Length: 200
Image 1 (cartoon, helix red, strand yellow):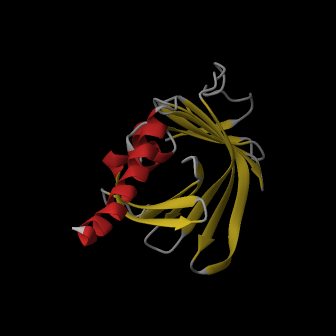
Image 2 (cartoon, helix red, strand yellow):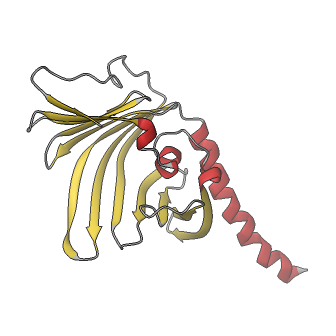
């Protein structure tokens, strides 16, 4: 019996971290994150690094403001998605239904329970941090494996995504604010005059 308990204890602990994170995400209505994003390629030694701010509201609305290395804005009002390039004075607008990803909706857009989207395949503990190793339940070439690093209070510190080609995208959370009251303009699709718009 003693050996059976020693085998079961890690399994119980493993399941708690995943379910507790899901509960914590379910309690978030709005989210603001200052982030650093690094994209590493298997065929190129230097990573692409960008910085900015990410906002999300439960229901599918989001806004990403890239500030470095160059400005770019991505906004969704829940129906359409806008990609705006200020330097080129150009923009692309597409429908949300053409760009759906269960992984993104679960981890970033607060729109799906993570247990519906992922199977947990591992857990790594280092110091006071825990990294959940997740695999999407539905095959997706862009998301082969996902690593979610949590601090001791189960706040997300970083999300690392691996695709089947070996490309790794890491989003480090520098600061995080929850359940703020967004302005009406935050998720509105609006462009300055003189911008060339392509609709897909």
